[in-house]
Length: 598
Ligand code: GDP
Ligand code: MG
Image 1 (cartoon, rainbow, N blue to C red):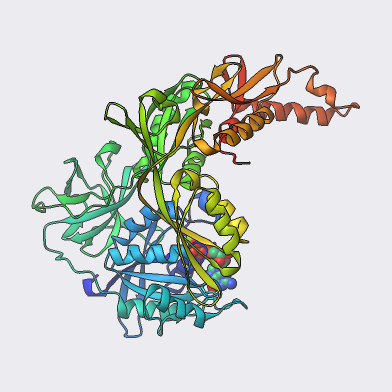
Image 2: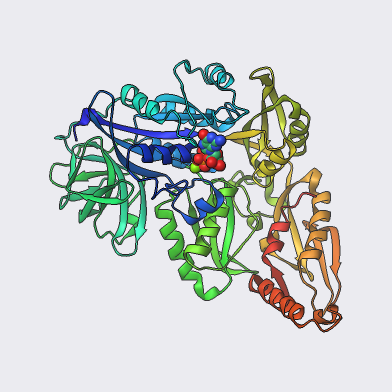
């Protein structure tokens, strides 16, 4: 392909504004797939993505499009996820592009993640092309959406394409604008090789598969390559592109996006963000990599079957290959045995990793309650980093505890200002300001402790605003708060995996809620089990699980066998996710009840 006829672009949008649907239509119009092969959201190939209707992993596809100027263009479309937890994936895709389609739902207008994605695109110097989508909806108001793009984002929107990804309106026009407005890649195809690794995954037969964007030079089959940060060297066995079917090629020139494989079995050799160069004529320096994303939420993951500890490690290593924001290190808990402390970008990220470990690697896991990272200033002048509440030092050694704070931006119809502010106050938020985006919509800014929003903030925001509010946040730093560790004791023993960090003013209420909830979640045993919440040595709340008297089956009056069997099965099912702590069996649910607010 001629370099001046290559166009590399991403699609960015707030979640549900239609990125994946638009990607589908673009694949169809360019003939990459026939409508017969088409299934909805084709690029969302992960089973989990299709089920949840969200994009988690980025995907790159090569297309050809014959434009009105009669020339054939080679395009690389990189789909990106829209959820706040996956910003990292978005910034990776954008680094491989020159342009971005900014999709805005004509009925919703500009949302919090629309803005967040625009900032990422601007950081990467991309040409941004606004597209107003869903104009087929009766509630669509394209003029208002345009006005918001101009007022809130500051992009000219007069020429924005009015599209319906669903009905296939405006797709050609979008492709023409890409040809016209997105700059062709530069970079000398004859220069020393520099290719940016933007993704990788593990293939059971071919080893590590690397997705890359060739920035300079040409990468060829059979070539000996070197990873610039690790120094590892490999021969390229195969290379190619996805159209979206995998197609092998002999070479990829500067500007192209594709994949390579080299029988790479050592996962540690490949780092997303690293530069691939050629061993004969290497580039003098690496491309700027990515900003390392620091995990914000940590939890312990323990295999139910402790014999599968090594399988869990292998599975985590494989997932980390395509998800460099995931961190893990070994951890032991008195209660749960051997497991891993894992770090995530947010709760959704945590949930997805957990589900993938269970589905793709057949692991049964027990997850402890998530925690943020605290900075603990000790009386001896040292600072400790604590990502596990049970590791909190003795109160006598603590001077202050600092917790992470975020600046949260909430966009919503003005009707919901009340509930939004109430929620933010309840979550210990500091009001910063509020402004009107237009006559009916507002933007509210709060500073909030991350520890308060990672749990159920988003769900509550959604339910409090009938789904209309959108939300984005960025970490702004650490602030000292009146925080204390709360221990939970079962049958008189401290259960380390249930310890949490709480604000002093809320400790009594939380203690009460948690001990009551645990009472309902932990099954009855042959003996009575006291549950206590304690701050230091002081018990602040308690409840009691009564001893089991009758067989559960006794509850089934009458002789309905199938009902009895069902009950037994249900009992067995519940058992699977239990760990015994001393003589008490604790189910998975118990570890999440410590997050309950009321
Ligand atoms: P993404 O989260 O941005 O990838 O959004 P999706 O492509 O998954 O679309 C979200 C929802 O909006 C799906 O139910 C789509 O069918 C729907 N949708 C996408 N584009 C259009 C459109 O142009 N018109 C209408 N009416 N619905 C659309
Ligand atoms: Mg999607």
